[in-house]
Length: 260
Length: 260
Image (cartoon, rainbow over all chains, first blue to last red; front, top):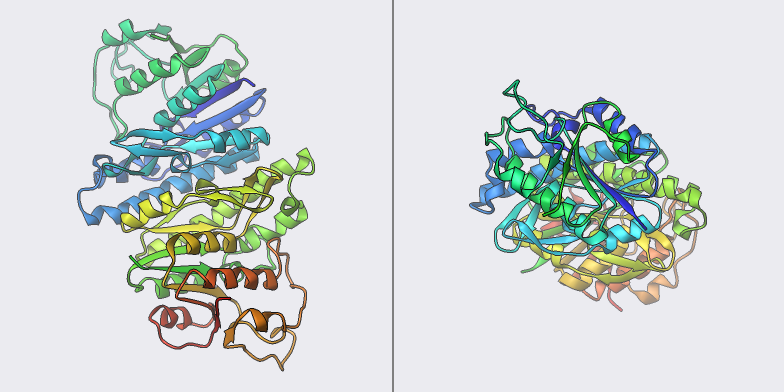
């Protein structure tokens, strides 16, 4: 059965500049936009300011350096679960039968990458008519001790396993621009992006702590995901209605990521 | 390396008679008693009033009957994660590097029993010096659709895998009595309980909703656990200091469960 796979970006459901600040109204609205979606649905959310700020402060993305990091591994995992509980609560409040599946419940990690992924837990809850929700997290890592599993890494694993009909990334921008739209008025949206166009993009550093890599790393991941789905797109999760329309297959302002 | 395995009973860390009522002061005190424990530690907690009341109301312990249950599977899973987050927060506040491992992350279930259990996730976090915390939960079930995994079921799986030196169940009574101590003044504590003594116990029904079986089912499980550890005991988690002393190997009011 066909599946839709949706990423709720950490920059949309949290204020990435302020530690552990949940954007409840945005999350509730996106949950309401997700609720009418037909067919099987899986959701991934970023960690936003519940993860990146403290993870960066204690260099958790670099793996085990010293014992003093371990308490922060526990603290950040707790914080991320607090966000996950808020997201699950928001989804349930809009009628979505959401259940949490932490990344380490279905995957093992090595060198910051997925070593193995077993989709069984996702298949089981999907089979019951539930909506699995996974997220970016600090995870045990075979070579690094621990590492960061980004939400995008889980998006790729799910896309590979389930070949979804539609993959939507909800970001805090309209899509991919030819330069940073937050810094330049001349930035123009790229409606369709393939590997060739990616290499021509201007490069800038992110404004807020992000331990899961730059936008270019994310786009590389999306190009890989585009190989496994019928349509892969980035929409602005802060503009009401965009996600809902995209889920219905209507044309919206977006960047469609093309395979290859 | 030797491990201690501790169950925080749902009747101690929640008010089992009142929906979703966390007993924060009890949990914080038990966390403070756990904090000085030497060596590896794993913790399991019950679901208490975050799980049993709604699970019983919607017959989740009987497995899939109709689609209307599915929303309650999601709701109860969310509620249990709310409790788990509170417990993790309480443990971290006392300096315990606690991380959550939901039962379905390491086990699969069939007919309300564990079909398979993989201790790798526990081994990994223990190896990092973290304290894994698992709990009673609603879980996918191969034959029933979904079922209840009790905290005690996870206790048994962990005891089998890790052969702990010490297993402690924190209950809301001093141990096992020859009759229900909440109903009879004449009830006498049984300091050591084996299979023979179990069959002589008087039987009464529990006061509050419990979808994981009677005290006799729990004792059967403890007898099985006693086979896999050096010492298995029940202590009163509501009496300050009992858990702490038991962890240090001091003699406390308790029932020691004997193997076989």
